[in-house]
Image 1 (spheres, rainbow, N blue to C red):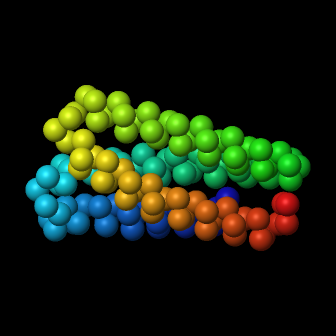
Image 2: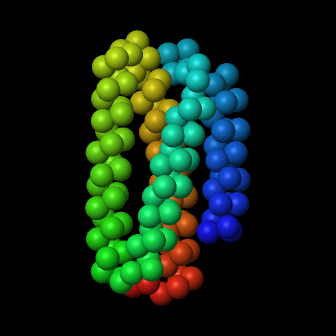
Image 3: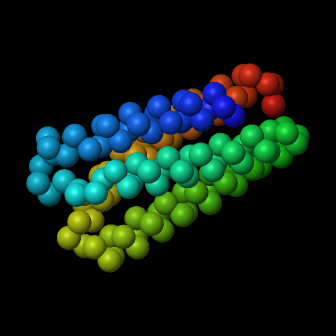
Length: 126
């Protein structure tokens, strides 16, 4: 877990350093004043997901797969709920929020899959 935390921290710093300065290059309608919190939201969701995967890995391979699929579906529903609620409450900023949210989702999904695959190769879970 220690090596994962180091990679997670470095990746999160990279994302924050990406999201903050890129604001200056976006069109005005896509700029978001506090875009950093979207990256932090995904950082902590990813950390919790990985922790759960590590716990599930200690059980059986079939439990790991069920956990991965179930938590992935729940996470997707939670993220969609966040998008819908935020967009309904802040219609003026909805487009910029969705753009930043999707960017963070893509970054952290790639990181999450990469780390999950590395974890599976490390100890043949399946």
